[in-house]
Image (tube, rainbow, N blue to C red; front, side):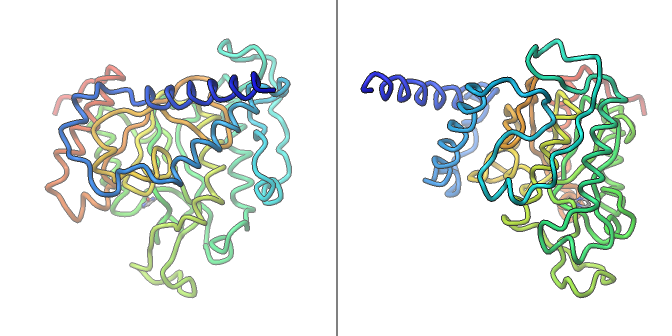
Amino acid sequence: MKEDVRALAAEFKAFLRSREEDDLTPAAFTQAAAPSADETETSSAKDRLTVRFVRERELSHAKPAPLSLQETPRAAEETELSAPVQTPVQTPAVSSVSSDREVPVSAAEKQAALDQIAQEIRACKRCPLGDTRLHAVPGEGNPAAELMFIGEGPGFDEDHQGRPFIGRAGQLLDKMIAAMGLKREDVFIGNIAKCHPMVNPQNPEARGNDRAPNQGEIAVCRKYIERQIAAISPKYVVALGGVAAKALISDTKSLGALRGRFHLLHLDSVELKTPVKILATYHPAALLRNPGWKKDAWADLQMVMAEMGLKRPAA
Ligand code: URA
């Protein structure tokens, strides 16, 4: 018995060490910025790590599940809230990365998985945003994208058309993507929250009625973006703004502390088959308000370009 406890403690220690190693950038680069007040690790962050340890341990000790897109077991209330288990995408091809679980490999298989998720999102009423939205906004783009951009949640224009990043911020995002030598269709664009968070939910026809999704909305909705990431299996994710960065990288650090380096992405509800690097940068709406930040955002995007071997297109 004592031996079991010792072994478990050793496993937990090793897990904590591996999380420290997840920060992919040499420490020297990150030490340039002095830590801000909200960078200190809180007990809730420790709790999250413990929960993740337990989940990952359960996963690694679980019998191989037949399909990777099926959600991994979660807390009881999550099971209650979740939509019926999706119909598996039956394909002959399996990932070479994993022998025990099938994952969509071809673009068509990935698209089928994304369509299934989008269908569930459009039917979703798991939080009050589902009652006040005009259109759910699942996300769009290349199902086999190497690069995903993830924002916080739809605004007025997106709510009216059911498409992500099509308002002013979206037009700037298109320019950022073009500056990287890519087209909008090359990447996948999504959001953490799939429905329009409004200051006054009674008035979806008012412009400027936007707010960031709250923690409850993010918690309920995050399984969708996680499943989308798992289905697409990109190499890189760019988190646009603090809300997306905090939801996907660390809820205890500021955007300023998270920017400027790659992190290894970990998801709560889905096991990633191949490593995904995530980089946080400013939200295009913030860049519209603070054009002086564009050079920092451009420096961030250039880091992604360097990793992807992209060259800036000739002017
Ligand atoms: N802002 C976001 O975060 N997402 C959108 O889709 C549009 C604006």
